[in-house]
Length: 105
Image (tube, rainbow, N blue to C red; front, side):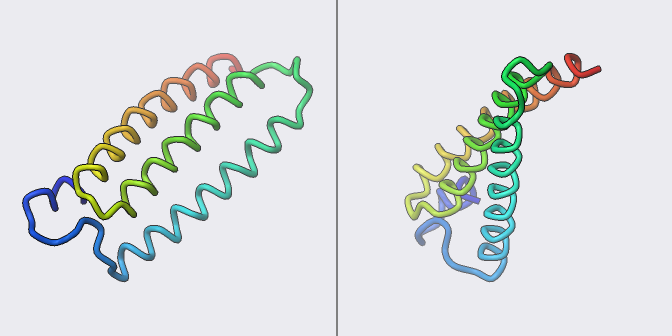
């Protein structure tokens, strides 16, 4: 969204029903990841895959926060930078999820 608005005259992330619904869904996803992370951290520290699961969920939290930031910044360039950071964090999270799957297999 931010990249598309770089060439436009208006501020990035103008309010709209679609944007608000997306932000609500994102907040729900962030809450679910936070709950999952809390549950994983409550598991015995020596449990198989615990460390990788914590790393994956923490990275996913950062990615989701970067997405939220990208969607709420009014400066289009800053929003695009946050979106790029989110993409990188999601890529890292996918790699960590694959590692976790191998450990748990």
